[in-house]
Amino acid sequence: MSAQTFGGLLPGGRDVNFSEIEVTLARLVRDGRRRKRPPARALTATVVVVGKSERLAAAADALEQLGEAAGVRAILISEGGHASPIARVTENAIAIAGLSPKYLNNAVAALRLSSLPAAVWWRGGAVDALDDLADLADRFILDAEQPDEAWARAPGLFERTALTDLRWAALTRWRAALAHLFDMPQVRAGAPSIRALHIEAADKPSARLFAGWLRSSLKWTSAVAIDIQSSSNASTPLECVTLEGGGLSIALDIKESRTCLEAVVKGVMASARVVPLPEGTLAALIGEELGVRTRDLAFERALVAAREISA
Image (cartoon, rainbow, N blue to C red):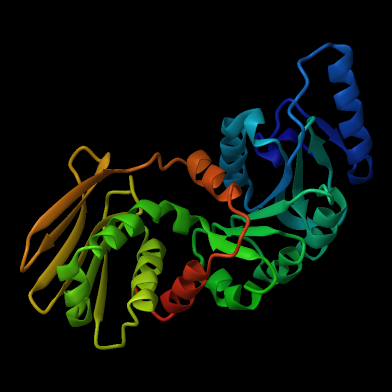
């Protein structure tokens, strides 16, 4: 299998047959010791990344940016029609190009470090593989460009793994900024009167997930109108959020600097808060998610509600 097939993944690695992966990993570790390289940090988890080759490259870069501090074995798999494709191996990473989806769970079961936690980072592919992969994952991170098919399968996975979507991590500061406003008595008192939610977003699935979080948290019925519009600015998943009703108006907006989020309440008592936006890089988001091991019931409820919201 050519270097082009791997799409630039693990350029310093060795190409081997699948059956030779573990032997090659051990040999690379021994060679490193002979050359007296500083010992790598002990591995603490397996991260399996599944997706198209171009999306695997970005994921590999993100995991590399986390550096040895992450302490993970990375398994990068693109789907295809091969039962036994060639693999490319470095000391702590394995790339497999063109693996048939029906063999995906077998490959992951064979290569994950069974004594350590395993996270699956699913960047798109055959959704039929999700069920089997969920049984092998302590943490399952959805991250598809078009998530509807995976989201439709998600409720069946909640009891089998700690499921999330990378969009949820990207919305953390937005959710926190809005939640803090509900510490204000006038906002809590006015919440039942909210009748409209307007969101402008570069990523509409993120907007639906945010709206689903509000609908599930505030027990909204169909009486609350939800309007989602496209934004051309892709630097953040959301551009602005507005809630209105009963004399109360709440707005979340990105400041002109693009580094801060402003939360404003108008009504009986005006108030404004500005919070910094965190680094939104792929490495920062996946690094945050790899630190979480438990189920997130708020996410699960938000996802169920998001599936009922059109955009």
